[in-house]
Amino acid sequence: MSDAGSLLQVRSKIWLEIGGEPVFGQGRDRLLRLIQSTGSINSAAKEMGIPYRKAWSYLDAMEKRLGFPLVNRLKGGTGGGTSSLTPQAETLLQRFDSLQEGFNDLVNRRFLELEF
Image (cartoon, rainbow, N blue to C red):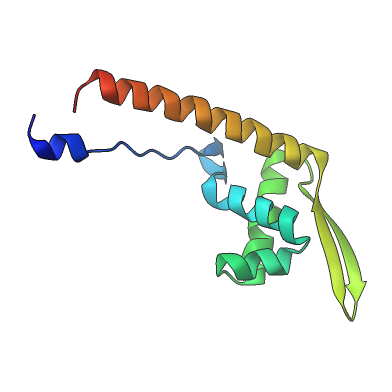
């Protein structure tokens, strides 16, 4: 193959669906991880560059489709509240990491086998 072939790289995305509707993928993974690190849905939304309402709607849709809570929300006073991930959310993140790692390894091996 040409020299350009040696520059080719394979990229893939994986997401989870229920009934054809997306439930979880890289964007929602990032949202949960930012909530985990910042302790705030609002701070996570700001870091992602999305409105708080959109972040909240993502969380609400995920929780409804999955059937379990992902975020513990504690309302606050003037300083605001805090948010933390539920054990189910932490398990979801761990399993998604494992799924992506295995998937990427499989795709990369197949890419090399095909000698692009």
